[in-house]
Image (cartoon, rainbow, N blue to C red):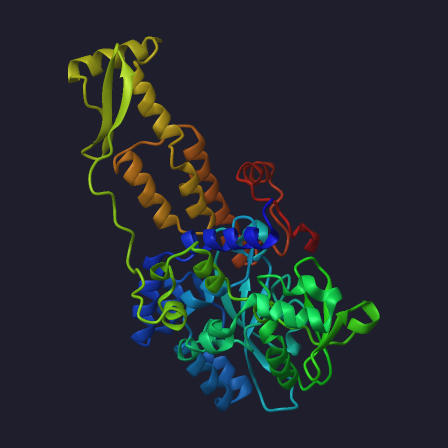
Length: 450
């Protein structure tokens, strides 16, 4: 029986395979190092919904200068790498607002730099947007959840998006000190009823330090809440490492330890479980967790030569393969193919070689990989894979592949309407779009905002 931690790791393994392609990392890094932070955001599919001139005019030149410095060192591909995800496909957590930084003098209402995701029904392209939020914007401010949440916040973990501090991942993780069994034994001696909280996946050895950082940032004291994966909450006091399960009364008004501080970073777990190679990590993550490893960058290598498939046809084994950008049968001369075309036009059954080609075009064997890339917004990668399978001159025919590509295109239109404010916070009601969304396995999980 697979544990919850195994399921979490498999989800993150899928994220590492599809969500942040090496080509995105390479392009975003080149642009960031050249000082083009907006270009880096565009390469990482991050929309910028803020204007520095407006910030200087409204909040002063000091705040504007701090914000500008943060944007110049923002690694949007690193932000996407660490952004909260949902199982089982590892897509970006929808309808979320994550605080990245806070600006303003102590004692005043802070201005937040936030990263947002669209609701699930408008998440085509898996895009993230950068914006500013303050209490004056109200609870919505142009987004179904405009206010930064307590559970997901990166302002206390700038190494998750700030290239200047990416190396802190090692200090904030300290894998050399992480011994799950030893931490579990210490925790068991302290609170036997909370022994299950020390199972692998929880950064118990970091809770006390992370709780102090949270209390200092929020100007609070006492105990903090820690949310476990099963929904229970622990009331933890970093002063004496005392803890106990929290009820609604004891939890009221307590600061909540963010998820990134509650759990061991998934990359560290994936490395130790052998589910990802260090070379496949983001370069900034690899530099922190596996120094000396050279990460893989650039586009994945295309197949070295044409892939041939064999088909039983006319009592023999025939081959089909790509030639001049088209999938064709290799063991039939042009006269045979022309005769078969006339027979099919007159209503006869096509020969097995042509049937196999038709099946590959309608439902290719790598359809799951194409679908995964489309789901994670990697449209260029999906089309490259289709081209490798079917050829650059292939004509799509009615079938599963065409349905997936058409659905992805329609959902991109829906996302554009959401970005333009033409749909409010509600999914489109057109029956055809609802049917297509159901067919593409994307349910409007946040329709409750309507």
